[in-house]
Length: 492
Image 1 (cartoon, rainbow, N blue to C red):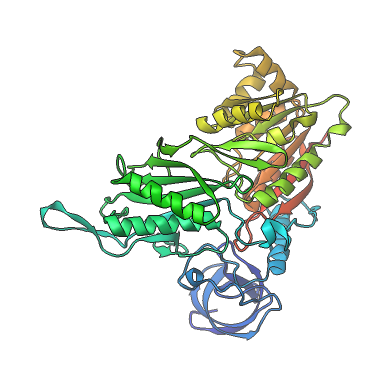
Image 2 (cartoon, rainbow, N blue to C red):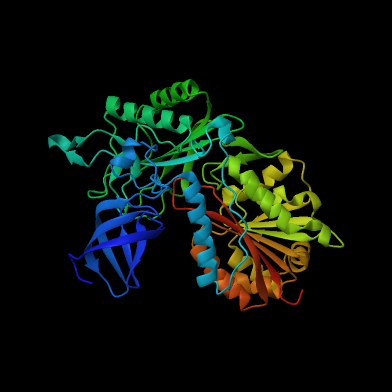
């Protein structure tokens, strides 16, 4: 196959970035703007050893799963968020379930893995909006297309403020007046910031010159409580005329049907930082936290703490975790490790029949929230400690750290390990420590089927075996999927 060749190809899969994938004489071909089931005419643009890139010439035959109803102006401008916007929701669920099965089989080395039917969103979910407006956290990069320094040192924006999302594989911000998967509170806050920056000539971060003030807008929304927290990530000490901005945010959020309860600034002056937020967070209006509910439990959320983004699906996700615990199979209530515990949501959700829950989390504010959440919900058998799970757990399991005898005893006697690591997956030293403990069941919650498959293969080599997995569609219209995986100790 050569550059410039034209081929007719059937699209069978989609990439994480939303490109259709087909095979031509055994070679993988990526075809943009296609969905599984499309028959396309593609022109080869780049040839690699085992795969090729192409451009779409025309769609010869449309897939039955292709749709045009997701009519988003920002997607048309290149927003890289909703990469599955041309694929029906039923088609998305089929695709994601297939991707989880394929990754666990190929990367995990599991022949014919047992994958339960994916748990998707229903039409009557989310106050009748189904798989739309489901996100309780929006993270908007902010840009004005650059800044210019005039005579006298006056800094001005080159263009109008854009509050939106990055184009795919770039850091160019696409302005997004509305986003179909974000809450109305988030979009109202984005519009208020846009107006404020225009009226007061507030600059946005320009990575080229490493100048400018506003870097990101983060909005957290309590779907059950209607409480909203706004965090402004800035390259500076403060925001000029901040009180005016707070009032504009308050009015906009209220008109959207929510209540603004907290406004914070987060200072990030690192020019080449890969992290969105810096270490210094200051509340400039309202409270330090907002609250929301999962099931019957109330949780407090701080500016830096992790909280699952889809409140409808998170209950189904946690119900799956709870079911995998199968408490009744134990003669005595088990001790549960909650690793990468965040604000304690999963561990507290499963604490009802456990002897004790011990959570480990690296983010200090999240640990404070987790222990506070235990108190708020009158849960007395849970405790949460700060640190890297891959460092703390091996110390206690090996006996190198005996500073807390009760903690050492609980970790060593744990029968269930629940883990919800970041996209990069778990460190081998943590998995080794779990294998050296008394744990006979691992419940692995993953947002990346590839790293899940990798970690399953490692766990299979150190005393555990794959039982089954259940995908949960936490992120409709995107290439992401959450998976709850159950593994058990081979000799048990």
